[in-house]
Length: 355
Image 1 (tube, rainbow, N blue to C red):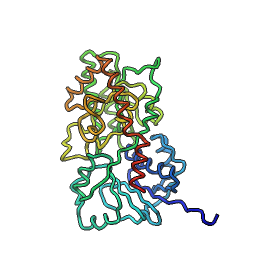
Image 2: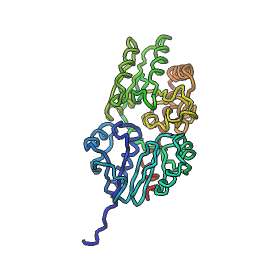
Image 3: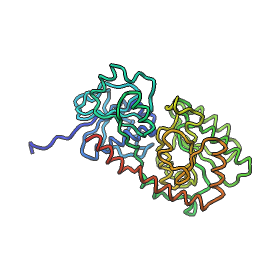
């Protein structure tokens, strides 16, 4: 009994944890994977109630994870998994993993001080090849790409809408925010209104997402713009509500990054696109802006559609609406493609990095 092996200890840090988005799902799934594999996992955050919020919004089981106050930077831990805000931290764990969700640039990444701190970093991990391209250039590193986790099996088996069929719904999911990375729901609203004005009947646009970090005013303005049109805005839905929306919708829209020069401002486009994979797993055909990491998920014309202009978004969507056989064909290829981003694959890849 005295020779019982002591559990390995991991510290997890994400400065944006209360935004409850895709980056938070990534980091907390790392915590979940470690706990599942016998690690003691501490999340560094000052409010223990954050775990309940993360579970409700993201649908994760974090019952085996503990919250500890203060930022300890891995001191007295075997592993520290740290999400960067663009800076390079000085970390002290036995093994330190630095994760980038954002393609930072022009932040003096190769400064002498940063190069010294990077000596304590064992691996740099990015969420997409798009992010990697900018991170490697900025910081002079050779990062590893581990795509974000999606519980594709859960979305693949969702119940659908009325009479067991998909409904005439176009769905878009993303934060109602005009801060760093605008999801451009305003573009979607204007295009859908034009479609309705042009004679589209029997279809509905649903915009869903978090508004709890400065998005209330933008959501309010969208409600004003959508009066009189079959457009519904749902703020701060929990994970169960989102799953039901995926199950009902036929088409998935995103205009994230629209109008942005991604080479000059890569932080303003979608760096990967977890919600697009979730939609695909549920059989929603993605019709999304051709920017950022979306092209790593979607093979244009095979398992989704990438568009570059408002007119192209409208025309391609109308084509899908009119050709039900084509939409169903896309839906099947979407589900197949989504399997490449499964939770099981993420677990395998992240454990290779950590161990």
